[in-house]
Image (cartoon, rainbow over all chains, first blue to last red; front, side, top):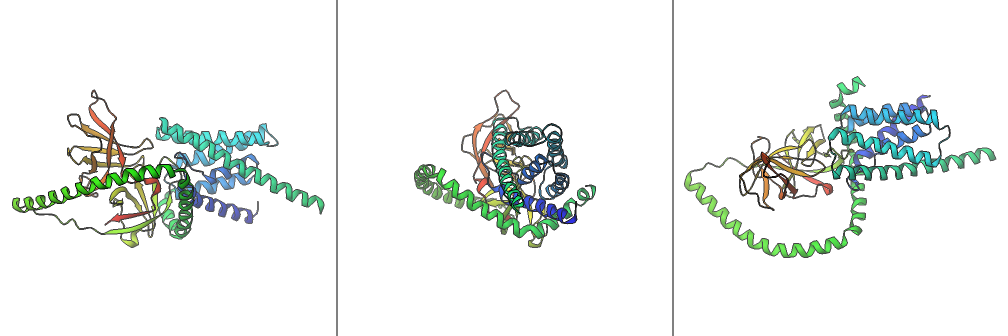
Length: 163
Length: 242
């Protein structure tokens, strides 16, 4: 991995953390909002790229700075879960399909928010509402990222073949 | 990672100092988008609210005149009893909200005023005259404010009419005033104010109104749900009480 890629991942992690803190956190549906940093992490893990580890490290650092969440929760959500997705993807699914990616985003979002619910002991109706809303929003946003990247990749691939 | 943890406070200060402008821009754009979509969903609700508020305004005018009369009487009585009134003057520093906590379970906001504008920790933050939070951390030009609805928020309060003391706790389930003694009769709609026992929060700042009773008669203390006066999800501008 070259320094340009590392710099790009650093800027992307910083930008997504700022967006999560200022833009997406202001737009909530049933109490939940999109966490772009996490979606990018899951996406990179689904693609099983080595950038996943670098981006995860930068995400943990920036969320530790911009958020007041406990560091243990940040490590669990932004490091352990994406690495688990990465491992499962490498071992069981060599080629990510649309359905598999949908499942990864849904399951990843479920575990992400469940950790918060368990940590803050919010087992009531409101906690479940936020859980459901977060899963729905994250899965939809995650699949938009996945489909958009797949389409762009196909366009570049066709151009390369023509050349 | 250890380095980051050791210097978390300093890193936050530097990050907010340089990122404050960017946070501000994204936050204001997000509020515009939110308001645009919220408008369509809430049209019928606004019509109903408008009708209720017009009726309420008329009755409030009557109440206002009664309050003025009572204030005059109160001032006179205090003078006669020889009360020395403490200096209750304070200044308000306006601040814009430029960021929020990404996780739903902690309610923090970031405002664009900090130590350079004489903001210190534990100062009260109000909006429309009602308490919305307290300054948790003050950086050079930004501050982090714990909202009253945050899981971390604990405020010493009292009921305005019965003068019963209690503790107001936040959470995603809403605001609950707890540890109220059992023999107090709590009326729905009774105002909840700060008790002034904490030191940093002066007495009498309005927080919300009581809604429904949460505890039963067999519990040691009463708990009541409190509806905040201000809609905290739509906060854009707040004031810090110095």
